[in-house]
Image (cartoon, rainbow, N blue to C red):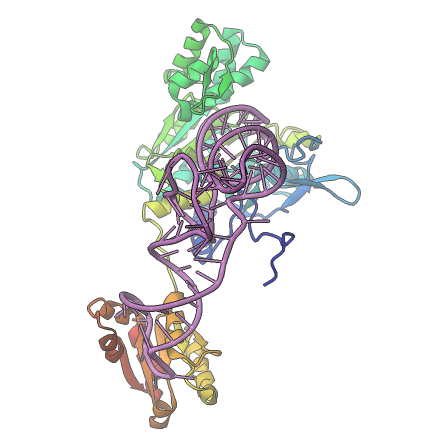
Amino acid sequence: MSKNKNNPKAILPKGFKDSDIEILNLRKRVTKIIENECQKYGFIELDTATIEFTESIGKFLPDVERPSGGVFSFQDDDEKWLSLRYDLTAPLARYVAQNYQNLVKPFKRYQSGLVWRNEKPGPGRYREFLQFDADIVGIDSALIDAELCIMVCDILTKLGLNTSQFEIKFSNREIWKNLFLTLKIEKDTETKILRAVDKKDRLGMGGVKELLQAGRKDTSGDYMDGVGLSDDVADKIISFMSDLNQSNAQIEEFNSYISNFSSYPIKFDPSVVRGLDYYTGMIFEAELLIDVTNDKEEKIVFGSIAGGGRYDKLISRFGKDDVPATGISIGVDRLIMALKQLDLLKAETKPLVVIANIDDQNMPEYISMAREIRREGIACEISFDSKNLGKQLKYCDRKGASIVLIAGEEEIKKGEISIKDLDKGKQVSKDITDRDKWKEAKAGQQTIKRSELLIALKKVLG
RNA sequence: GCAGCUGUAGCUCAGUUGGUUAGAGCGCCUGGUUGUGGUUCAGGAGGUCGGUAGUUCGAAUCUACCCAGCUGUACCA
């Protein structure tokens, strides 16, 4: 090994991680369940490109100081700025604007894919993660907003959560507009207020009020500016956030749909604001009501696992007429993290059979055994490079193989095979502390006829 | 970006008021065993003590600056 200061370090950029077989399997299974539900509601799949023109997905050109600005961007040969997608909604808007004439309206599509955000990662937050979106383009009705929420409930239920473990909270952007009108709040201040309100989950009502007025210190002692509202105005906003006695036409329409699903945990909560800029009507968020911890067993504030709303102006950015649209995004990776902790996702592994290599001379026999086993659809590998049986068994143990087949000269002569059940052996080992006895026991091992190989294998595998 | 904390072996960490050759556990490798996993025993590899400069006879330890990581916070389509 050559050691040199200039050797690259074998490490990953922060916020990225490799995905092993376990996480890959979980992603596949969870995605499949979500897909199935979407299909039941008439959605069809679409996959858009992972890279878009920066201007298409609504980001200004990266500035020199901070080329990132939240998205991963770079310049093409012709110096046009390109970006990795940071969500699936902006690319959908581009796709719809580009293909509008050819699409069947309403256009209902679902999409599962990785998205990238160039920002500081936090506990349980990465810069590359799997998102699942379902959107409906071409209908301006709160009924379909409601149906989306029902669908999200169905998805979460199908994933194994019960209705006391999650909650969908909805609100409406219009009621906030009205409030700002009556309070005579300026446009700039509106955004600041909504940002403060959006932090209710983390800071609580008290924290929000501090932000609305003078500002507050975070736990490190750093100070944040407040909005500077008077006590009176701040109080009005705070009480508005929990005032359930308000409504409008959209909310009533929404309620008329969900009232058919009284057991579904869908609740009006005016303090839900989300997105801040591009949402135009109904907005909603799915939240887990259970505690979640990260790898280090630290409790993390989980926030929402899905969210969405109506964005009627997003497609008209491309110079078209306004096209009504509504959609929901699910954070699949974070959802998996939660489901794992609730033990709702068990790792499932397929059994592996390993043929030990006692002598290279027997290779033709090993190869023919492997062929038979694989033809039955059972995973099988031949040990090629080691003659030391102890090492081969250790490899099998660590790899999680179920069965080892041992056939040396003696067995082959007699037309037999030693078949070793590793799981059973592991059980037996608990009661043996003496090394020689353990060796002698040949735990979980039996001898079978070569001709009955497949029958014996299936018996052991159950 | 702002703030606080932390940087010693692959991982988790110990290292006394500055004092000889920087340690432990776990993991890894080899052997006891070239036909038997686990347990066990014996041995081994692995460090620019985050970096640079300074103080000192002497620095992992003290000082300054830099870098990285973590946590909080801000921005976030």
